[in-house]
Image (cartoon, rainbow, N blue to C red):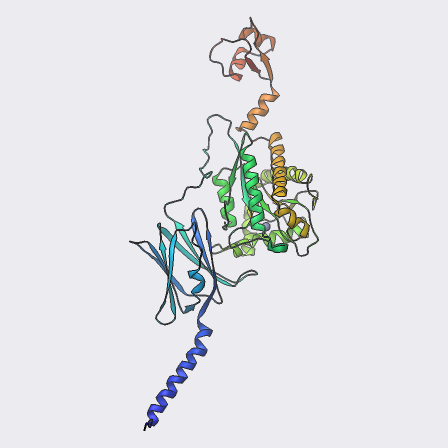
Length: 450
Ligand SMILES: [Zn+2]
């Protein structure tokens, strides 16, 4: 017969109470990983953990073999980590283990060396608490089209560089239209078409700011344009508005003071908060951004840049008006962060409102995207056709066309042709890069305007 002594009884009671306490208390304190996303980019891979509350974590790398270890304090919900798609990332395998009862250790087996970087993001409209872990590649993967352009082109006929920025990307889907169509996908498709068309255009060279589905910070976008020595920066968007009625294309430039319309102000505010959604370490708040903008606008070069931005914007707008209704007939202005390069004319193109069912449908169609891209390119070409930057092939062509020409016939001499055109032999030689006075019949000479 078993008789429990009273002390033994108390022991079991206490153990039961502790267990009950653990069950009640632990779930309230432990952090739950609700979802994990992975975004491979050309220079890093980003992991984003959706959490129900802020997390304490440590991360370190190990070698032979290369691994990245993330220790998450008092955390549960490892299932989503193990299901991550690892294609195009430096991660070959993921393992998780529970450590000291409730901590979670995540080990990423790597197939190349990386430098880890992590930060926490506070909740916003789209997301709750997030932990962002970037695996920055050490052996830089080379991406085509990113070689810096030399400062001086010896031929004096360099290409005009157009930086093409597909808005949003990765963590930041941009606006979401009917049928879950995402702005980031639509604008990347249009941007790629613009890139292809500009590549085929003599005298132009496109430079893509993002080449896939990953987020690039707003400041990094303008920095990339500068690295490419861009002559023009175009940011392509298809935003949503509060209601589904507005439709049509519009073009925006930076504003020195205030916004030209309520829509412009609303759009600029929404665009400027992209860093908070897409994930930038120590993302600026909107107030900070206003200060940055104010500082930039003090720069005197801005006035000239802004005037060019308005001109190229008007040309693109006119061009888009041939295939779509225009939301406004003129270029609108507001304080868009991404347009703040003091020395690169910059415009933000709203191809349409993704919140409008008809436009959302159009924007998803490859044929319509192609039409839109063609109009954007036509607008850019028309602007640079009349305003080619000095030292470019286009400027050279324009000069040649504005000059006369002369076709050499039998018996012609250099001095005779110079005399006939009332110019000096020296200037005729210079205009045609002639080293000797020998001419051949049928040769076309440029006659410089005196
Ligand atoms: Zn947008």
